Image (tube, rainbow, N blue to C red; front, side, top):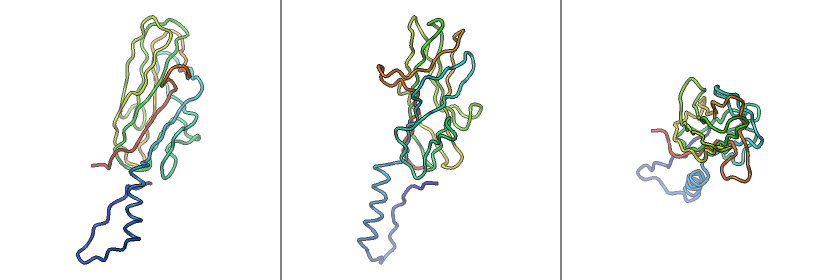
Length: 186
C-alpha cells in the first residue's frame, strides 16, 4: 500500500541535518507533483446488451503513476488505488446506436461493485442522433487504499445492443476512467 508523506515534527533542540531535510522535502514535493493517478481506457468497441448494467472492460492505461499499478490486465474491469485518500475522477463514454436512434444511455461509476455504492451517474437522453457522448463526468470519492475499487457500468434502453465506440474524430469518446489522488482521508 502506498503512503502519503508526513512532514517531520521537530523536537526542541533537534539539530538540523540538511541532507535528511532535503530528502524529506524531496519526498513530499515529489508526491505532490506526481500523486497516484490512473487513466484506464478501452481502445476498441464493446457491445452493450439492452436493459442491463454492463461492465466496461478496459484494455490499457495511458497513465498509471502509483507505488503499484492501479489497473491490471488480469482484472480489467477494476481500478484499485493503493494509496488511501480522497480522489477526484472523471469518466467518458460514447454510445453508437445500431437500432433506433432514440432512448437513454447511462454511465455509472461504482465503488466495490454494482450493488454497493454509486459514485457518479450520468443519464443521457438521445434525440434523433446516431451517437451520444458523455465526456468528462466528474466525481470525488474516498478510497481506503487496500480493498476499495471502482468500476464503470453502462446501461441503455435500445431494443437491440449498442456499441460503445472509440471514435478518434470526437474528443473524450473512448470509454475511460480517470482517477487522481487529491488529499488525505479526514
